[in-house]
Length: 121
Image (cartoon, helix red, strand yellow):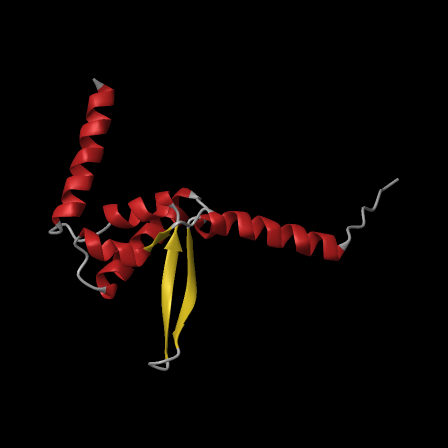
């Protein structure tokens, strides 16, 4: 005999919204902060962001938990722009995938490698 479980769709929608809010609460960083770390412009940030998303995809990491975009509206300038909020992991993935001639990116990569090598000894 098969048992059919019926779920209240409204309750499921509420639980889904709650889970999404929890995920969003972990996105504490803005990709605009990367401009302080030697990223020259939005195009450079977007390239590193695409690489970070590719890393997540190749490792089976749910990128929705670490990367979300939203639209920012400037009523005075009549412009809309897309901005990204990211988790700590997302922020560091973007930073590590920045341009190799960026001194912050190079220093971050060297620090990670030193830490890995120290743990291996």
